[in-house]
Length: 254
Ligand code: ADP
Ligand code: MG
Image 1 (cartoon, rainbow, N blue to C red):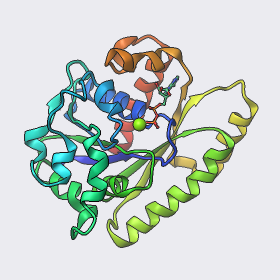
Image 2 (cartoon, rainbow, N blue to C red; image 1 turned 90 degrees about the horizontal axis):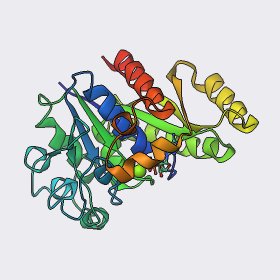
Image 3 (cartoon, protein in one colour; image 1 turned 60 degrees about the vertical axis):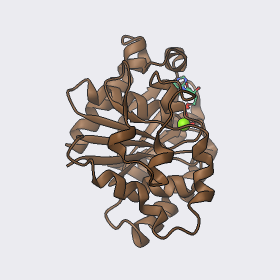
Image 4 (tube, rainbow, N blue to C red; image 1 turned 90 degrees about the vertical axis):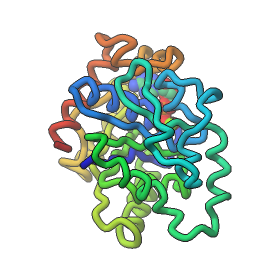
């Protein structure tokens, strides 16, 4: 049975996609069967996995509109070691098309039930909004991983996300849990980052992954080559950090 983990934070630019791609690659490198679902109409997880989103004819849009199953739309990332269900701009329309459909928040959940024996882990890269797409991700998942940049407004947004998770837990998905928080793009020279990091530690304790992902230019360059940084430059600080996060992830979720 696959473990389904949503990577979510309604803030944009906090490294959700980067974390999804590199956890996917890191866990796949350990011999696990991984499926990545790109739930963001921007399709950054798709391009960052080496797939041209303009050429990806079918993808998660077809799954959500129930015109295709995951098994028939998934493709293999050329280098990352996992399968991916791609996204493109069509997906933005799905939000509107699904209004009025019964059980619209659980479409992805139902679709994943049919491939549960094919993967050890399913990672869902959520868009930067608490939208119907994100709700589909959180309804399908058992755990949520929250990437966070350690800055003042990060904490403000976090309480909205935690409230949303609680609501989804009570109405739709009683076993949903926060699987962990990851500090991303960390700059240790910045004292505010240090303070926010300490507050996260005080508040979330064990939920906080020990690995801290540093700001590193190689991480930012990798997507333009369609590669996880773990493959683009595996000795870079960013890659080593994501490798360590993948190891922690495997200890936590297996
Ligand atoms: P999100 O999916 O939350 O919107 P992304 O993963 O797309 O965030 O990251 C936002 C931007 O920051 C991207 O350009 C990405 O390449 C860059 N980035 C992510 N992590 C790092 C890092 N550790 N160091 C430097 N740049 C990073
Ligand atoms: Mg993203």
